[in-house]
Image (cartoon, rainbow, N blue to C red; front, side):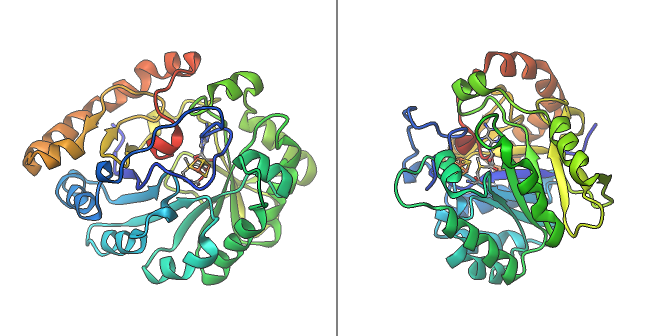
Length: 329
Ligand code: SAM
Ligand code: SF4
């Protein structure tokens, strides 16, 4: 069985963007009260007393937008300082990186993924649901700041949506030629905005690779990550191109991760709602760490069945209760 040692932690369900594919404008979203969100101390207790003893060593902090959480630098440092921790990374939309990159670097963080779906300010604003002043320039400056501060690897996550940003595939891929940046194309999933998904569908990674290959050629990279990305590079480029193909290719058999939502629900599979455990209530009602560990260990044993069992019906029905921002994408 695959070793499950990677926990993705959503620190907050709120966001300063409202991306079409994640939090659609016309959808009423209910946000958590701050009292419902795991505190830093509760999160650290779960990590130290439940997850680390079960063999978890890799952690990704995400959201919603994790940079909205004021105690993010402290959370980063405390997780990094645990002797068993092998890796801590962050996924952000980059909007606040201009002012927060230094703080996060000084807190010990080195690995960062920034979502960037367009190099065109108008398209970018359309995707992130912004009607006022453009947010592209500040996001772009945030990415440059993170690079200058020394984050390495610096990865850019791109979701390609037909008729929205598919004309920018080559431009986005070209970012890896002169810079040591890693652009990762993530297939659009029917989570968050199933209507947009049904209207536009998704572009398989193989099609994106074909376009890039026709322009520059493409070779397999010897740099491999912790996760499910297939990594390639444009010949002689400084960075790499990753492809995360959860729609076109089932990689459940190599899945090494589970997800903890901001309100403490542990979820074994992104594409499946079954089997979740409410760890916040358990913790707040005084359940012993040993008992929580037992419950999580049981869930880990069930995970391979959960991964495979309902994935197909879930993706076909486009019927997910929570958005990516709520789950912690
Ligand atoms: N706010 C941060 C950000 O945007 O990077 C972190 C949370 S966001 C939910 C994490 C990742 O999920 C982003 O890279 C985003 O593009 C991706 N995502 C959100 N909804 C998605 C969907 N329906 N299909 C594929 N990826 C999605
Ligand atoms: Fe916010 Fe990230 Fe979702 Fe966009 S993808 S709305 S930035 S949580």
